[in-house]
Image 1 (cartoon, rainbow, N blue to C red):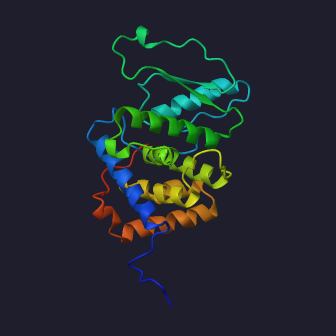
Image 2: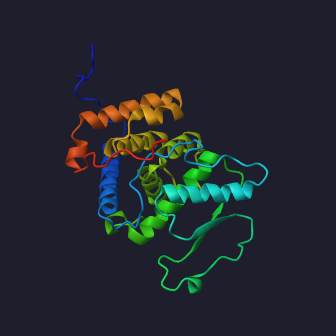
Image 3: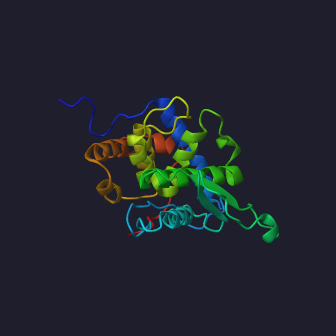
Amino acid sequence: MLLFPRSWYPSPIAPAAREWMLHVAKCFFVARRDGGASVTEYPYLVLPTGYHLPSCRMDNPNEWVQELFDAVRFHAGLAHWPARVTPVDGRHENFPTRAHYPGLHPPPRTFTYDASMGADDLVTQFASHMAGWWLERYGPDALAPDATTSRRLQELIAVLMGFGLFVTRAALLRPHSESSPPGLGPTEAVYALALFCQVTRTPLRRATPHLSRDLRLDLRAAYRSLRTSQHLHSASLQPCWKRGGEG
């Protein structure tokens, strides 16, 4: 006996979290589609493969991390914004300042990273940096982060930029910490990934091979919930882009 009719599936997240995600997604996709986001590509699902990201280089890990960061900037559509990364405990090497680029907007930025992080955590951190940078420059006032939601908001924007696979896998393994602001939980990250796939018309078969069995089941459930509900329609979020970034 079915508890729910096949034409409707329950949402896997709380209504308040769902409405917040839909609101953020609407603001992000409208800003990006209207050209106010200063990005160079439509969003597409970034895959943890050599097609999208450089292979790890153990002979020169710092150079590999810089290449990884540059790849994240490219897929986020922000490769034209000057930036670099340096280890948390490393020195900031000389980097061109705004004086070297008259009229440059925004100014060059240097981000730090923890060299002990794995690849998924690094990509998630770099994508969150790009999301935060985008919010600073072009984020609508309705998405102004506060002290309690900034990390969640940045990770959600990172998912909507195409990095949902990394954010989801990192969220599953992330230990709980009272000292740092909370990011997206695993269920929220999966729902955000399903939302991205719906709006960008990305087939689930592109995402599922890179997720564990439990996450695949959760992603399909979230996707069905979005597809069979009126939530996308009520939020004025309809599939609006062709798929991209094939690989």
